[in-house]
Length: 159
Length: 261
Image (cartoon, rainbow over all chains, first blue to last red; front, side, top):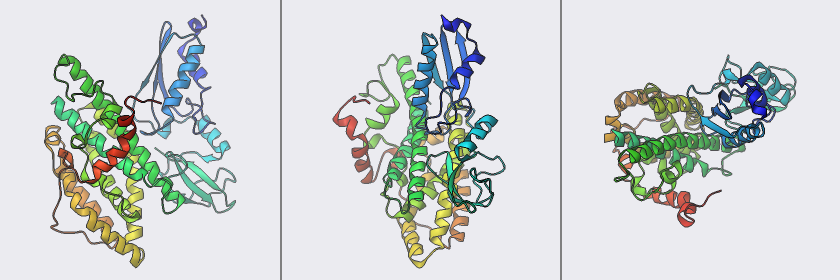
C-alpha cells in the first residue's frame, strides 16, 4: 500500500504533475488552484478553487486529480470546490511566473490591473508595448503587442 | 425566509444565464476578432456566475425538501433538483431574470449599452452582497466582482468610444438608449424577495445614476428624463423574447430528457 507512506507535503508534489489544460506550462500547484489536502487513512479530500467563476478547466482538473490519487492507492478521493477566499494571482508561485514568461506569456504584475502600456514583452523584454484588447485567448489574459519586436503576446491579468 | 432566499438566488442565476446566452449569440459575429472574443469571454464569466447561483439554490431546495419530508417540494415535478434542472426545466413564468437582459441584441452599440447598464448595476450590487450575512452568497459575489470589474471597464470604454465617435455611431447609441432605457427602472424596483433579503436598491440606484451620467457626459450622450419604465421580469412576467431564448437553450433537455455527455 504505497499511500501509507505518503504525507500531505508529498501529495502536493505529486499534484505538481497536473498541468492547467489551458496554460500547460503551469501546474495546478503553481497556479494556487489546490488550496488544501486532507488525509484520512485511504481517503483523501482535495480542496480546489477556480481562477474564474466560469473556468471551463475545473472539471478536467478534478478528473486528473482523481486519476493521479487513484494510482497512488487512495480508495476514495473527494474533491471539493471552494470559492472563498476568492482566487487571486497573488497565489501564483514565483516559479510559476518564471515558467509563464518562458512560455511567452507576461506574468501578472501587481502594480497594475490592465495597463495601457509598459507591460514587459516576454519575448524581447522591451517595455515599449501596448494593450490591444482587455480580453484575449482565455478570460484570464489580455492581448498586447510589442512595439519593438512587433510580436503580439498575452498578459496574465491581475485578479 | 427559505423561499425568499431561493427566489433571490434564482433571480440572480436567471439574470446571469440569460445575459450569457444573449452575449454568446455574438460568437463568430463580433465586429472584429478581439471584440468577438471579449463579448464571449464576458458570456463565459456570466455563465460561471450563474452556475454558482444555481448550484447554491439547488442545494438549498434539496435540503428543504429533506426537512419537509418531500411532501411539498418547492418546485414540483422537477425530480432531483440540480443546477441543470433549474436552468433547463423551468418555464418562462418561473424565470425571474431582469427584462433588460432578455432583449434582443440589436446592433453592437445596443449590446454594449446593455452590458454597461448591467455591469454598472451588478458591480454595485455585488459590493453590497459581499457583505451579506449569507456566507455563500457573499463568497460568490466576492469572486464574481473581480470579473465584473473588467466587464464594466470594457463596456464603459465602448460607450464613450461609440457615443463620442462618428455621427453614425452617435446615432446608433441614441437609438440604443431609446430601446433600453425603459428597462432600467426594474433594476431598482425591489421584488418581495429582495426586500426580504435586505437588499438596498435605493443606494445602488443613486450611485448607478451618478456613474451612468458621468459616462454619458463623456460620451456626449443625453440621460433621458421622466421616461416610462417597464417592470415585470423579477416576477416572471416577461417580454415575448424570453420564450424564444428558452426554446433554444432548453431544446436538448426537452427533446431528449436526461440526456448527458
